[in-house]
Image (cartoon, rainbow, N blue to C red):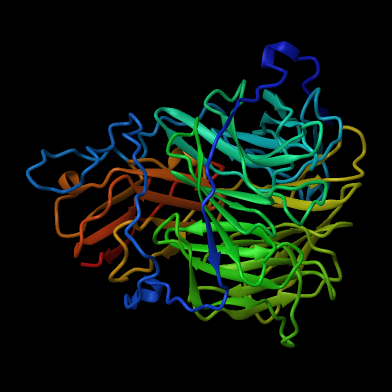
Length: 558
């Protein structure tokens, strides 16, 4: 079926919703890429100092959700009990698919998605869930796009329920979410088309009202140059509130201070030596992974001081296959301590590396399928990969024999396959049939009823001498609903004190399967803290809550 928004028109706020540009001064730093740092909090060894200062995690003054007094010092403060984990208010939409399928319906496209009146190029990439609705960013690489929300409780009969556009939005392969001062923001890529050339960077959308999402501000970044689609453009963004990390291809990594989402500023530009074509960037706590766009190189960086990335000894490496041959990946993903790479050359397929120790990455598993990889998304023991002329689901539960579970198809350059509950969304970014840039196909008979669980934490449990400016992050076995990651379900407090007194106020942000907590004040020196993901708090896209509380403890330097 075809789902569009042309008929809804003004009722859903069709039109340009771009915001004013934010000015920023550039500070450029060098990344030698020679791995001469030690990573500070890696594996709890605590004998390194990755930065030249404690940094400042931001000066935001709270988000209005009653989640603490901001100092967390426990010195005579009255008790301030955490809210119940499940009291986050729920979602506007019904959540992920709630329909069962017969075996003959699996892997067959049952519906198509179109962004609406402005989606004339049918250039689609990833989709995610937010507020119980499917969020589909759509835009070509040269700009002009939007965001459309769908109710997919019946995934074969999706209903468009929200729509917004911006002539400055660019092709977006990753997006994250954070609540700041009562409003919800999402970050995407941006491009501006002046008369004499292109500029670009990032764009922030207010998605608090999913019926009428709107672009509220942009930040142009230095060195952006188009029409080369790979050399000096922004290729991905990662929202670890209050910071946004931007992969800028040959321009390196941009670190943006978004403590005020309506006025983001450039805090740092980190350049690699030799040049690293930064394609995908992701951050878990104090650890950043950036993989190459169409290359074998991956770099792990210590971001204990968030605006001063530092190399990690041994963390600058080329991904090799089982024959020790370097392989070029198109894009990557990071979850459960593993790096997943969609391979574009030498047989295609998927390559998985073990990154639990960022100073010693090692080969884990592979399948050379013969495809031409695009983007990859893990869920449980499956990995979903778009491979240009086909999409594949892999079972990587046995690293000695990664198998192909199924193959799916959609006309066009099929680079993206995103798991959403018991269905997958196929998306093409070129040569789509009209109004068929994305399709929905079931891959499991029953709706997802399995709870999400934490499968990786950074800093690692037991880490010592961590920076006072540290942030704390986890990955889950599947993507989670951003609104459910909040003060009641994502907690940081002093290990030896009453959590209701020593709780730390912070920013909480979510991107796909990653949840981060960033304290709003520097931590106390020589103090043990516990990071907790509570039971019955965070939920997956289908509304299943975490069943078992997860905790990890760390000690600060000093």
